[in-house]
Length: 155
Image (cartoon, rainbow, N blue to C red; front, side, top):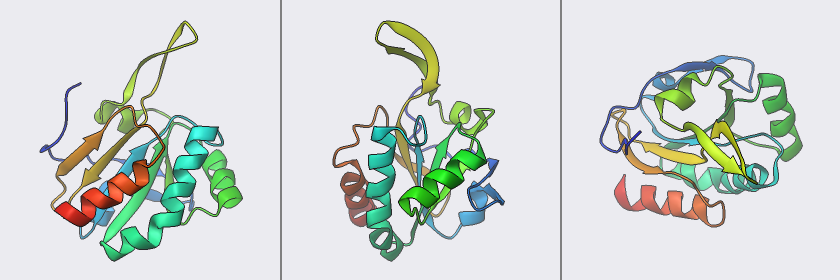
């Protein structure tokens, strides 16, 4: 799937780490950082989540909500959130509904094996619900700073 920049962000409703069902459209008045990651508790995903956690206040100042999405079930998200004190919601995309809609559920190669999985990706959605920026195959190092910088300069 090609670049989604400039397109309307596909809405979805998923169970979240706070025990509620959350829709993208719940955050109409805010900018949204929607980030997809492969798995709770894995090293890269933990670093990324903690980086977002440490910058949450900065994102708030920019009127921006952070939402993390992976195929893990809610219970797993809750453990992950509690363990690392994550102040933002994690959404359980067990049917890959959101991942498919955003084109991040793809064939991956790892140690010579091929399998379907989440390509680590981040989308910035503006207050009109338009995707204004996307990063695919995210390298975790400095990614959160880059995301924040983009929002400060462009939204």
